[in-house]
Image (cartoon, rainbow, N blue to C red; front, top):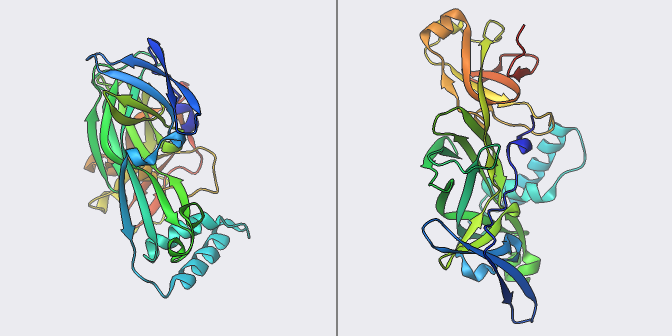
Length: 320
């Protein structure tokens, strides 16, 4: 199953009424409104692309001067051509990559409060579901409320990247900046741990609501699916410095196989990794828990990622 199938758009509308918002240019858009369980008014304002950015938080980040910028970009282009075997290179992604390697740009970051609703296959909101937010090597944990929502304050949802060095000093904002909507990685389990989902969610698909007068970005609704476990043999792991049983710490991770070969993922970006126990290393087998239906590759980490299974494993497995 593709990651995209793990998520679906949710309407989250109660249909109590209609508002009409008119701007200075006399253009009007209709907005529905409702209430939360606590009685707070909720107004649907439309897509996040229509949001007046003066209504949200803003932080400007000025990078350092970098005389090696051209070299960094050229190196990135050559590396991408070598990796993908093509002369086609996404220049925007090269600019983003170069920014992290050489801080020569002036960035504008926009922040907003966000919410996501967690439901089951029938659309019923799931209270008490645990939501894990991935950020670098750490996960933050949240719990959904009675309406199935969890909230995050001050999330970086959009970044304007300067297209060229010092372009902002010479060009208008429309010409000087390349906007990019940010993504957020979430892993969810129901309160009884029988249901779950995992995936990337991009703010470009968000809509905006006003809750009791506060602007909130609402990401796509997450539909939880049944979770499964699968037993994985470790006897095929190759190129380890020592036999598994002689290695003190070995990390085991599941990576969903979505058939996108040209995109390189790290296994721990998908499902929570687990450390192998002494018994698992000695028996050369491990049970991976909490996997939604899909096709998976499994990895162990010991001074570098080692692929466990040469062919993707379907979860759940067919009974023989």
